[in-house]
Image: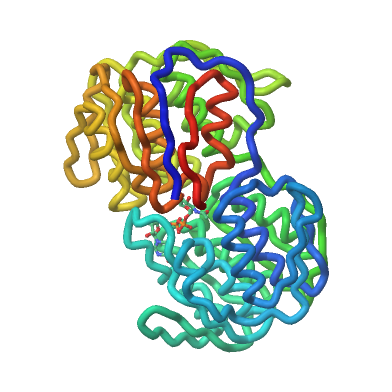
Length: 418
Ligand code: UD1
């Protein structure tokens, strides 16, 4: 659990370097289960989700070493299904041990995953993929057991699910024969996983397109890899900057991974400049926006909450349509406690921005919602106390208060028992 004290902020300026992407690193760590050789991942961010997954992988028999501050090596000589359901229930990405365990050992038993309560988040598409590769599936309350020797298969995903695409990629990379994923997710983190698996000796083509073809290999080998930067951390800091009279330089980012967010920021009236040094955002956003969350390359659902924090400062009505998760406006209620005027109709939120907000006590409802509340606190007069009883923010941001602080904000961590 954590508690943050956030003081009103009129101007952010300076520069920060973006960490590696949580959503890239977690599947890469699970890919370590596919080989006996050590795999080495560099620039691993210091996040609770990374620590939890480290514990889960250790529970699956992997030996994980912290080579230096940010380098992890994983070695999985004899992997097996995890014994602790409790750890898996803490994070959604834990379901990504399923594909590798099944493909490598012919058997996987995993508890149904947890994570943020932003929607139902079923795993039917993951299971459909495993069945298409020949797995027998037994669903019991709270867990799923899969067995069989996997072979190539054709899978059509009804929705381009990031996690299902990753699980199928992981399993298919060592299944016998060729697997085709149609309507695959196209997120940059998928391309990164394909590149990582190919560096391990897999033969995958089409990563980043709707059709991915995987030529299963008998064995994969170790590799050393540096994951892509975190486009959501970068976007969150850009939203923070645009809420103030900011001039912020983000180093180490991939602007090509965040075009939808950059277009929306530009629509608010800020100036964005790319240079070899990084991406600079200058000025305060003023024009309201319309945001529809979609699978990549559409506007990312993970950026909806931070962008809504920015909308609190945009004079006029901004419209948010959330199409990916059905319960992802929980932060709006907390924003209203600061004085925000937000109307929610099913999956649409209408934000009447430009009102004066006043600091008070608010709660971090989920990972991105929590970050959005930290940003909202910067916009509110006086002081905001942000209570994060579940430690959501530290699950996905490495030292967000410190990064905002480096840009001139005053955010202190009052308590951290994470
Ligand atoms: C990943 C990201 C998360 C992001 C999300 C969407 C990681 C660790 N997490 O989550 O930050 O918000 O992508 O970009 O990378 N669905 C099904 N059946 C399934 C799987 C998914 O119906 O078997 C639905 C979900 O309920 C949701 C939608 O598909 O409505 C998108 O989910 P998915 O892309 O799978 O998200 P995650 O992989 O869980």
